[in-house]
Picture 1: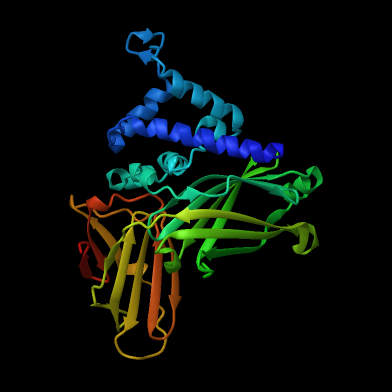
Picture 2: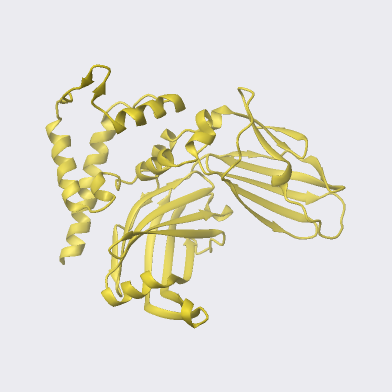
Length: 355
């Protein structure tokens, strides 16, 4: 057994031990948006009081938990060393809480639920053909899956090319356990230095609904040479596969069969699927006709039980349409608290969000 494989196995074992230890502790109470802002200010200057500065109180350590945290931190690097690469939704929860969209959505957000949506990360480490991939976290809300991966370019020459020119994968293929291709997906990458990139894959497809194992196959690293008319250059040839297991998760599924009129055309809202991170609606044209240029987001609003209307800023949308059918998808920038949602308004028609 070589060093990287042993390190990966040891890392997984320690993470699992730490995860179980943390789960034994009682969960923290849910904080309001005002409390979170106050906590952020306190963290920025934790020992400042009205009377000046004081020494911090020293918390008693749980020896086993403290030792496990130290060992894990010694094995991990970057974000992982900060204690975030524990899976189970912890890293994504922190990202959402630090997001600039948190203030827009305020009390309609529930990041605590991400800890219950954590998908199993089957692949801890993949290193071959000049790239290293470390899976950091994964969540699945029944519709949308998000996977956080740390990618490191190992070859210094390739690293220089990749940093100089825009780069991407020649092919990203995602397959379910049954071999069905997940067609609706995307990814984004953020450079964090030293040839390392934080890559987030987003999967939003009906084929994921049943859960199960899912494989991400990445092939060939491509760069676009801006100085030569953006010609494509293969800087690394290879294939890398990462796998996760999605746990089946309940979502709100409705069949409203309500008529929504837009641009003088009647559309029947046949199906609606809502989860904390995504909304999907399927429409059928009531009477056959030619394609009508219409998007449901133009007359869409989510109303809360407290009477407020949800701020829809930051949402991303996608539409698949033909002359007589339309499939609409929306992804939220924050995980919504489903218990706070009351009804959905589509082109003046109210759809109660209750089964």
